Length: 212
Image 1 (cartoon, rainbow, N blue to C red):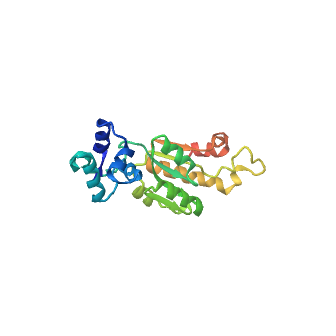
Image 2 (cartoon, rainbow, N blue to C red):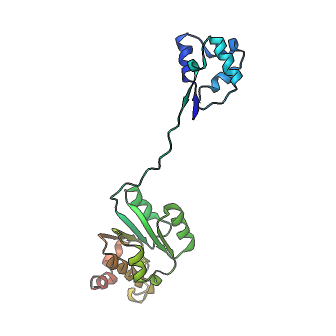
Image 3 (cartoon, rainbow, N blue to C red):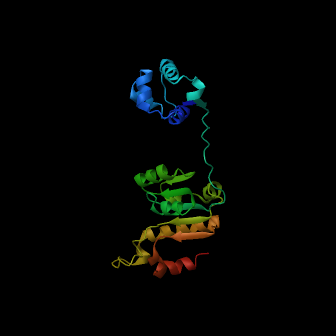
């Protein structure tokens, strides 16, 4: 509960009386009168008695008790697509999808600092820091059922158009994309969204198409 003095200032308007004139007549400072403009302002009973005497009114004429409404936590909207971000880094893709109305329910990342950033920003139920290959099929099915969308940025150096000095099939990082596909197959997600367009022009993509 809190005291509101809006009735006081309405009374002053009705009587065409200025706040500074009330302060002088009641023998209080102008700062004290100004303070009463804020709901919940705390002043002594002596001040209120002086104001009432100056205005020849009662306490009910100048103040009222306001019952503050309890703060109700807003529930998450139902029916949003649930997103898992693999090789999530600090969460750039996650942020974009969250801003678009998706719900981020998990992240997987190798780097500790990046994973901690993702954890702090999204607080999703499944946050895994470490080797993605060590996440078992059983754990995926147990912890991540209901994921609708899988996004992520698997290492792309091996098939990037900027890297022509090493053959794609010899780069061990390329094998990590198959972990991405493993999650997609296990969770039967509606959508998957890798972040590297050059993947689709690479030898690796021809292997992915045959991965069943």
